[in-house]
Length: 240
Image 1 (spheres, rainbow, N blue to C red):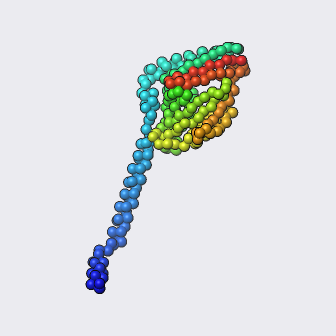
Image 2: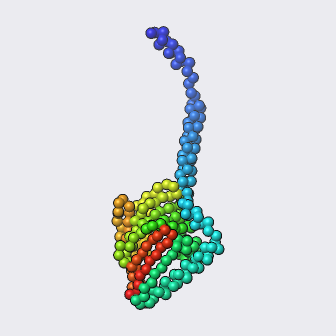
Image 3: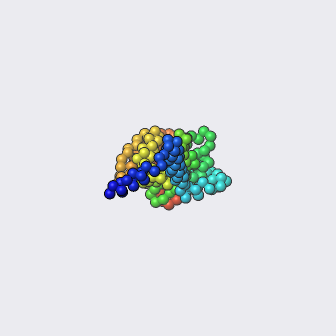
């Protein structure tokens, strides 16, 4: 037994000891390795945040000449609707495709002085599915950028009342707080419409807008129906 203990002491005595210089060098290698791992993690997260939905890539790839033609058609539709709004007891309706609205966003909304989009949003595009609108846009804040992709369910339970339900929210391929995005949208809508009520349905944030629309002569515009189908949005109403 004593011989074994003696052998162990001899083995320990011959084990090389690290010098201070070697310890410092090893510490630097470990630190650089950790930095590299962190860099790779953040880089992968950055790439994930830049991932574009397929509909967004397709919408942005439409030639500008096509976008300009579609935008001109949208502007004509808006002008016709505005004229219909002015007539008392006039029934009116509107139908817009996602392609037309995307053309409007690509051409009209980017004109100097348009002020239709918040400065943090760039190149927004939409898609319509049954009962929902999907919105994707580049978002830049404090030197950081990502592709924000959200899905909003939209219903009209009664005339002039729209209910939005935040179904999903992503930054690229990464999940993003639905509550935060819903609050931002609600704040924007509140500044625009004034009357916005927030709630929750099945764990999804909701916000309700009570529309108070009037034409140029002060007559009330009553939106009586609102429907989203694949690729198309339709609405109809009357001017009282």
